[in-house]
Image (cartoon, rainbow, N blue to C red; front, side, top):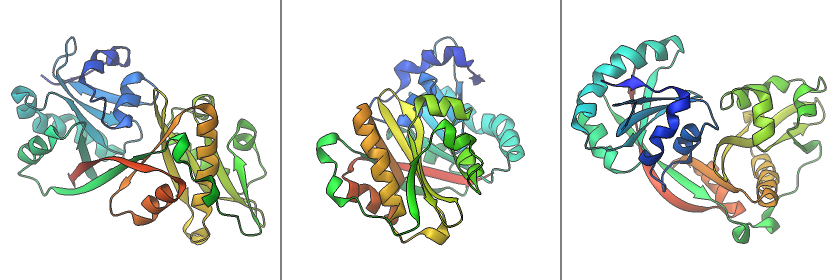
Length: 275
């Protein structure tokens, strides 16, 4: 029977990790980020389902040919996951496999649902590939600032809650992020509004997963590129590897990554259906 693991037992899933797979999976199992894990056997798991702590999706891990687990997963999701997801006002169930063998199983197990799919591209940047000379200048009125405790506690900005909200989508609290992660933002000085952020969403060993967002009214000014450069430079200084994950069809995100020097490491498939 599928059951939930205590966080103190997440280490029992270490041997289920695809070392070449998504960093988010490692981040949850290592305990760096919040998340939940449901497994076939709490003492000796062979297959499992990870629910990311930011409620942004699920990952199947371990043995994709585990027939008993696969037969139980639909009922488990209906019985356990969906009621909680609805309380969180989630409208769709997004799931990926930690390795490609899960793709066929996902398509089989959820064949009775209206299953959509998409592709995700994962990029990494290594010090020798960083294109520092491509860093754009900012228009007058914009300034890059590091996300620090002082900034997070400041009353100087009209929308500091934008930073708080973004960080808390990934981290249990601001202090944990500040202790473990890296972050920069762009401030529009005329009204002291934070209009772009780039920060660590997940950490797995020495890999930092990037999250980036620019307010729509300030897009087209290369703010995302500039704040990402600041983020990447600090990653290089700290000797950690920035990791960029975006939908294949998200051409602006991919363009920013490639202009900075990120190169594609692998592609994986995601699936979704309505709750």
